Amino acid sequence: MLDHPENIRYPTPWYAGGGSGTFINAALLFHEPLSLAAGEKLRLRYRVLVHDGVWDRARVDAEHAQFISESA
Image (cartoon, rainbow, N blue to C red):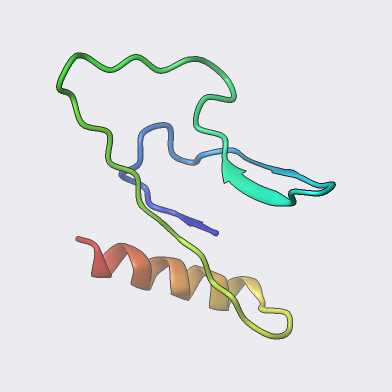
């Protein structure tokens, strides 16, 4: 999961749940509530990478840098 640095509250905490409905979700409201003014837009950008095997930190960092540059 890649979090864009322009997202509000970057870096965003994440949480996951198991059981009958396994999920992973950005926990944007984990530390505190968020209020938006009427008509205010909330734009969030994330990227999910699905791959085989284990990546080292350099490869993850390169993917994150590419994600940021593509959305500039």
